[in-house]
Image 1 (cartoon, rainbow, N blue to C red):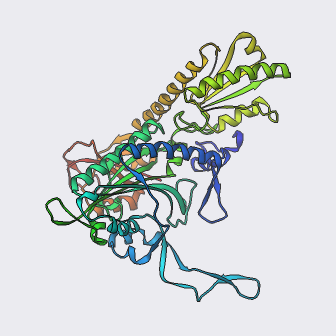
Image 2: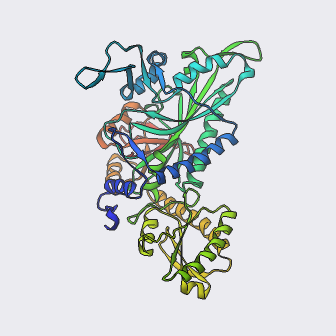
Image 3: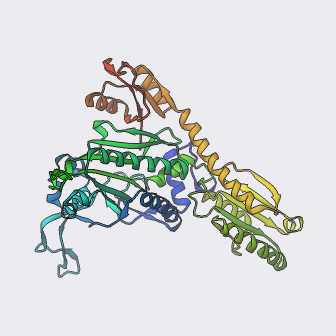
Length: 490
């Protein structure tokens, strides 16, 4: 392949890795299992942050920051939580290094911590220990807090953005006076994630509940949005958890109700991470490079001049200054690539690789004719149009591109949801087509585990819009009340 990118059909996993690196999104770090997010990739993540942060604040949330280190004893207070994260924790045992006298730096054995510290895999325990001092009565509720942070979950097999030992995310942690308020909060934040995924990332998602086996450690209910990648595998794009009173009881967080009774508070937590970067790449991109939806692209329009003389360049510069001013005034992010170190063809290929939604090219002949060439990244089509009314046309085209990218992903997703009624049919679809498989399941953890062991497919969710429907489990033949969605997943 050109640009050093393996084709999707040849090796999808290698294609993904090649693309993330060649498009300057990220690279592997010197620390095993970690990554360096490069400026272009971080620019996309910053766009995600800004848009989500605005939505969080519109729904009443405020940002805070809690410690990176968590005392080990905190994890012991909520049994299912510690069990869920025990095998992924990085542990700090000492606080000092020393020179061994031979020029080597070693751990000072005399500087051992009295209590080991866990590098946060998630912050429920440290936050609920903190909330105990913030909450006394119903007047202190609700607490609606979010933090943007890094977390560590030790991974042996890593893939850029999708699975790394350290990654970036946001985690919301809220406290409520009633069970219903907490459930409504968990559902509200799931809606925020789904709207963001579909309207900004242009990734269609299925809203659902996780099964008991796939639920977040310590939660009573986990809501999720599930997306489908171009290789037919699912990706969990966001989760929102109803924690009940588990953490409040573990950390003795109580409040005096309006009726004067002392009660435990009700809790939620919810988060999305840099995995969304992986979803963005795998849902839309092609063998030529990234395909970025305009609402997320750091650069929505790139302008490439084509000239031979300084006079020609000067005329183009004057026009481009005017055009860029118009575009910026309507909120369009635009870059004028007037580097004299690279030829136009190189620039075309570079911005195609980086997924810029729309390219504007113009030369001396265009200036004479009052035209420009527009090239769409999503359809890889070109057209010559008039300079008159160009900024309005570009605005309209960006909207069209956003819709088209979403529709293409939606058509793919919908064509890869298959209803099956037998285990043989299940395995055949999984092997030959992939995607989401809608089928009956008897509701038992054992059946779910057996199917995963045999096929590597998991129940991605019980769709929230799923209708009750009597049937029989494809694996055991036992009664079932509704269909669930299985898939192989990242």
